[in-house]
Figure 1: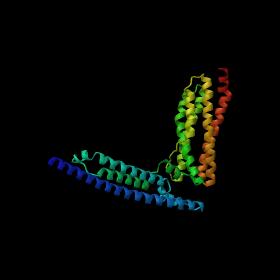
Figure 2 (figure 1 turned 180 degrees about the vertical axis):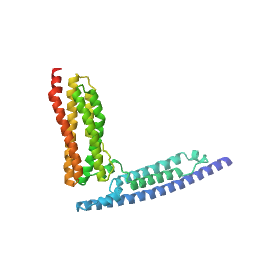
Figure 3 (figure 1 turned 135 degrees about the vertical axis):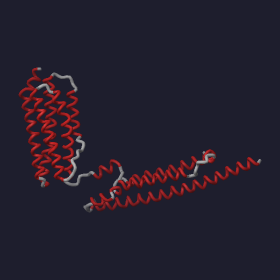
Figure 4 (figure 1 turned 30 degrees about the vertical axis):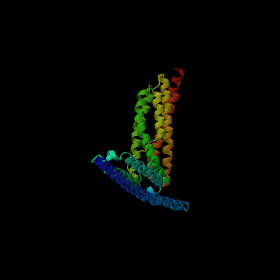
Length: 307
């Protein structure tokens, strides 16, 4: 009888402890939920004001730079936290009740500690993500929007800078695949020109006062991939030369279009030294294209027809 009385007393004390812990956990969760809700409301109000300013053609660039997280996806993040807090509170509370006796036997168990720590950790991570602007691809896309010709000019310089580096790696493979000595010399000459073209772009970046940095040129990646596919095929040497010329001219035409636009924009923006450098590269690309056409019409295509 004495043992049963003590056991019932222990169970009763355990239930009381867990009831108190559940109340504390619920209070903590409510506080965090209220805080997140307040932040979400602030976000919505700020977003609404921003949209009103946009409709009035007000410049928001300074505000976006100061507090980008307020304008990008923070409401979604708040909703995510609110949902997780509601789920975690109920699940962890019911879990404690089901396994109460097992946890009481462990001397290292601290009622409610895991639940509160988890909730507070989520809240800290949420606030940190707001301060640092960690809102994923949506935020980066929003902040990278182009608002001026100057920004477009810079973005396209980065694109061609990466494209030239891709060509620099591809040309040695094309030289090796070519059977015509004349075609190999043309590729070798353009390889040397490409190194100089890269230096010109770096000189333009230096004039702008920014570090030379490329942005992945998806178009050039596709063109280079097509060239690699061609070189992986078994083909008559003359036919391969004709195909290599076609692949190279596709690259040249892409570069000519890019450098032509950049040259024109540089003139319109008053970057006259940059415009001269870009014109030099454009002249080289046009010269290479004409040279490849001459090789194709004079020898490569003729040999390919007779192969």
